[in-house]
Amino acid sequence: MSFLKNIQGIRDRARQQIENGAVTKDYKLDREQAISILNEALATELVCVLRYKFHYFMATGIHSAAVAAEFLEHAKEEQQHADRPRRTHSATRWKTPDASGRDCQGEP
Image 1 (cartoon, rainbow, N blue to C red):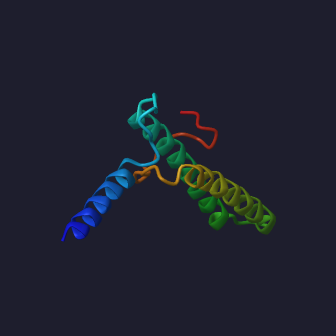
Image 2: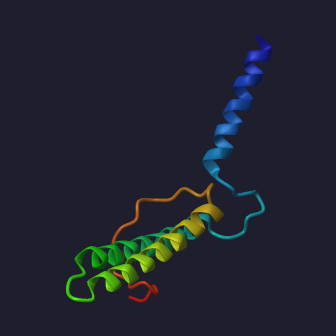
């Protein structure tokens, strides 16, 4: 019975550490501010992906194939940018992004 209690205690501590993310006791920066900044960066990149995809689908005219291909290339690049911080900070909890109203360079 003592063994089962020990296993449950280990599981409980592991769940708590997973919930806390990749943050140690020595982390000096404001965790919530860091998460907020990363979420805003992710939201900005995803809005850019959506804008480029919209233009990709809406391209018309005589040169539409070349224009659409260019927009699709930019959308793929922006998606790679969005995926980069996610891979780097995979233990950070990302919130659902919203339309930030910023352009693709992060300017208001």
